[in-house]
Amino acid sequence: MVRGEIRKELRGIVDLERLTSRITLGLASAPRTPALRKSLVQVPVLKNFVIASTRGRHDLLRRVHDEIDELADVRELLESAIADEPPALATEPGIIRSGFHAELDELRNLSQHSKQIIASMEERERKRTNIASLKIRFNHVFAITSKSRNPTCTTRLRITSASNSRQRRALHVA
Image (cartoon, rainbow, N blue to C red; front, side):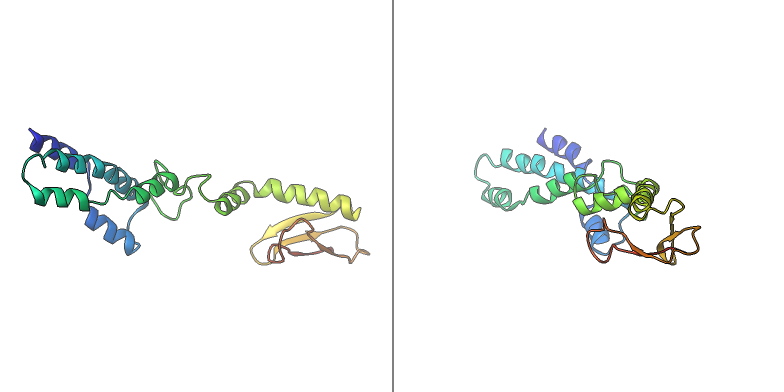
C-alpha cells in the first residue's frame, strides 16, 4: 500500500540529476525551472514516507530519513523568484517574478514605459531651459539626444534627474 503511494508521488518528480546538470551548465530552458520547483515540493512528502516505514527495526531507513535534506531554502527561493509560467525562451522577459529584485523591476519599468519617461523628460527640460521647440529622442548610437529649432541656442544640457553619472547623458541643442 505504501509502495503504491510512493510511486504516485514519484510521478510528479522530474529527473532531478539531469535537470540540475542542465541548469548548472546553463542549458535548461525557462519552462523547466517550474518543474524543478514542483519536484522539490515532493521531497518532504517522500521523506514522510520514509519515516512511516521506519516503524520497527530499520535503522538504515531512520538514518536515511535523518539525512534527507528537504531543500526548503532552494524551494522557497524558486517559489519567490521564478514566475509560475515563464516564457519559452530565456531571452524573453518574464522569467523572474515582479517584486523579487528591485533593480530588475526598475529596469523592467524603464523598458516598458520608456516613451512616457522620455516624454516627461522632454517636458521637464523644456520648462527648465525655456526652449519650446526642444525635442528629446533616443537612438542606439548616441543614447539620448535633443534638438531645437532655435539656431542661436548652443546650450549644452544635462539631465538633472539621473541618479548617477552613468545614467546622465549629454543633450545637444542644435
